[in-house]
Length: 410
Image (tube, rainbow, N blue to C red; front, side):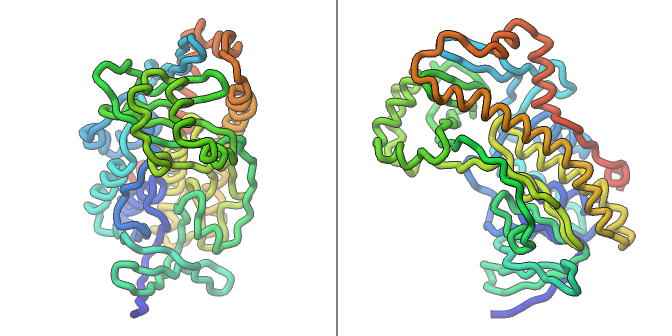
């Protein structure tokens, strides 16, 4: 086993949406950047696959929207829901500059960013490389200690800046002993895929709520990607009741699936997402910054996690490109990123917590057939401008970021 040492300006732990976007933006500005991704590829199921107009606008700024839309994808123009026997349109994206959400496997999105990054001389993506610890010198983070699983080599990568973009179980924030504010979540999610038939009704992004059960359905062209919402910690109870009971519950909630639920023939076909809603109290310390899920784990409500991560990456690049280029990065520069992104994060998480408390939790407790929908849904059904307003809140979010001209013009 060999121990190697490298030097770069910025080392990013995690090749997810935040890490890949930030790496591309910094490299585009001419900054030497190394991204460390512990897996051999990006092929993971049930990651954030909803690319919102806010992210699409960033891709358009970067000249990457056309190649993105050349990939296989589905467009979502509205979000709808069936509650009992009633249908509701919840959010309408038709009035936005880019009037749709794109459904696309996350690995296709990340592969596109990786290919775009390769065109930049200062972009270095290292797969099969896992961060093990932080390199600390004189109280400052000076790089990372990593391990290359393909070559079996230990690595020390020295850098002016270390960015933790390694998700909600971040090794970076664990090694830095950063304090987490946990807001608690009353739900978990069971993800699964079911085949789509030619006779199926189409609903690009919709949900069904009835008899204490909630199902979210994403039309992925030739299959349905489904999220079955359960009360937190009750997955062992479903296991105990048996797979046939779960299949029956799914078929009762969505009768269209009655002819195919048996394809979920073992529990390996059903993936548990333990939902978290938390954020770091402080995102930075000398030489270190956390962004994306490493800084704030989001609930899957609204499918906004990937898009908030992209907004973090854009804000980080905008704030730090010049200090990194001039070799004058300070802790105040890092705090500027948190100041820019903390308010949108806090408000968004507050809205998610409100929906958990006042919409999802009550719906999971009603075991009889729902005959009267909540008043907010009745109001949305009567008001097109409210549906468009909610579409803007979901699709664009709070304080959307635009890529700095310093980066665009490089």
